[in-house]
Length: 118
Image (cartoon, rainbow, N blue to C red; front, side, top):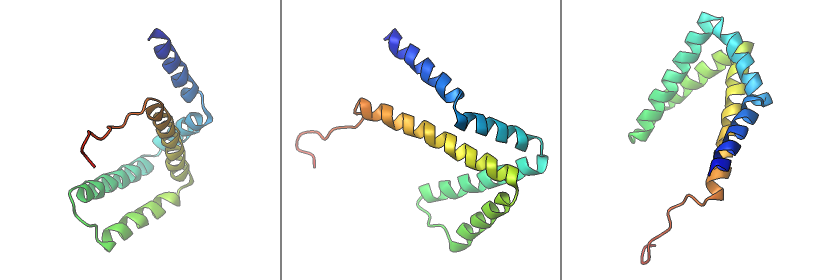
């Protein structure tokens, strides 16, 4: 089992040293120096979470809600540093999600149907 942990630490270092993480850290540093940009990003994330929670609660979002979120995203993307931050964050999260999927697939982390269930 120790070998698994050692390889996990090796994987963590590889992710830490990846271009995706380096770009994310550089973009985050650039954004953190701009209070207005940080506030805009926080507002965008708050709206995303609010809308997501409403959807999980069974509520259908109105077109106005979707349009408001799209307009906020467009406003954010007008700022090159913010756009780079959001894009680099998506790439890093996607890489980590892909790794997680690879690991889950390798050990078949799915519930099998019980006999008689279909």
